Amino acid sequence: MQTDWLVPLAQPRGRKRRCELCLGTATVRCAGCGVTYYCDVDHQTADWISIHEKICQLLIPLRTAPPFYNSDKERKLGKEQKRSREIFLAGVTYDTAQNFLSEGNHEDAIPAALHSLKFTIGIYGPNSVELVPRYLILAETSLGLGHLSQSEEYLSQAHWIVLKNTNCSSDVQSKLHRILGLLHAAKGNFDDSLYHLANNVYFASCAFGTTNNIAVSGGYFHMANVFFRQNRMDIADSLYSEVVNIWYDHFNHLIDIQYQKLITPAEIDLLSEEEGTEEEILDEKQQGEATQMLNPILELREQSPKPQLEKMAKVFHTLAMFHYLIHDLPKADEFVMKVLQASKHLPGHDLDDSLYHLVKLIKSKVAYEK
Image (cartoon, rainbow, N blue to C red; front, side):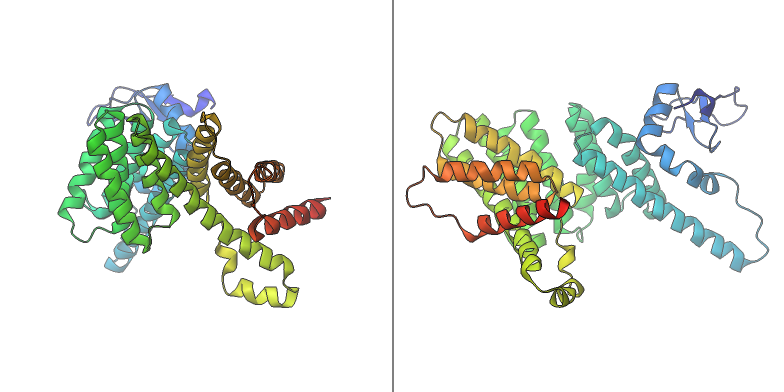
């Protein structure tokens, strides 16, 4: 960030300019757009790194006086264009905040999430359901930074909107209860945490029509963590196994699609692409969630005083499929070898077709890259 993009402000004669992030009295202005203000260089830099660099020039038509319109038709068109820009920016800033959050980068997620919240309020009003996902990102990032009171404030805003809107989707309610569960767990309120996490599982099941969707796995995982902290190891172990099973089934489905493409003649494969099988991929959010759940479970399994080889092999296999799907072939091959090593000590344990298909896919990729 170059210092020539920072412009000190003269003392304002009228309304005071406010910082984009904290609403404190502004002392500097972005010279790039000339319409964004900050209380100090630190907040300006934080905003630039998070989102402002992407949207700097896009803010100018929204924050400058509109042109003179010669007719009502032109005025209406101008309002529609302004709204379209705001909707676009609300989406860009939300996606950016979500990506930072998926990477565990809570600090950089906050400015983008704040922008998204402000744009969304401007578009839909202060009590709309569309605000809830924005408040939830801010709550989760605050929680990740250890700012429990701030997280609770954002969650209260989100919860109040949900209570006032009976048409709120099950997906949104699921996410609300998950973060409420995490907040109570952080505060040591385990009973309240389990209540909200159970609701997270219930609403996620309603949203996706099944208890085996990966969207449900997070609720099980965080419930397992709570039971683990309570030293209720049997329940925790059972829930961790359920998480692994859900991701195993999901990855196995994706691997099966990839394997069918490998063995299918090219002219038939064109038809399968037209039917939409190419859409079966892992997005950044799913990759982040899989990593955040499966790696800790593997660590717990490996550190157990009495390792259960069958469960270990299942985690290895799941992670092997995961790393193949994110194109990390060396890591995928490493976990395949761990599956084979663990399987040697399991009586009567034959390798299933899924692992065979995965090995074939890895070999075909390696051969292709050579």
